[in-house]
Image 1 (cartoon, rainbow, N blue to C red):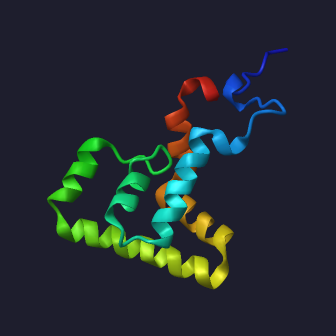
Image 2 (image 1 turned 90 degrees about the horizontal axis):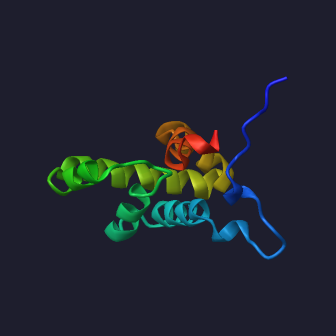
Image 3 (image 1 turned 45 degrees about the vertical axis):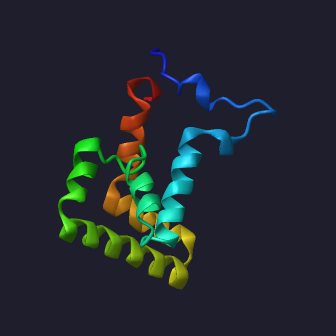
Length: 115
């Protein structure tokens, strides 16, 4: 019988801990704020820099020099907002998860110990 590797202790909560205090919850909040207001550059950049979306510093810096790529991102997030308003938050999140590979990015940001 082989032993399974369990997630790191940071996923074990006591009655005093809150799932909302995790870095992943904060990343999700940035993502939701960026979807609600993609025209707010600071909010969108913060969301893009989270472990959920997985953009590295070099890619983020490149957006400073490529107005067309930045406009494409703003439009993409504006489409997510429209989807949210038409269909609800969960269908919108499924769309973001598929397009932006959120599950893969989250696992990569957690590292090998979480697998």
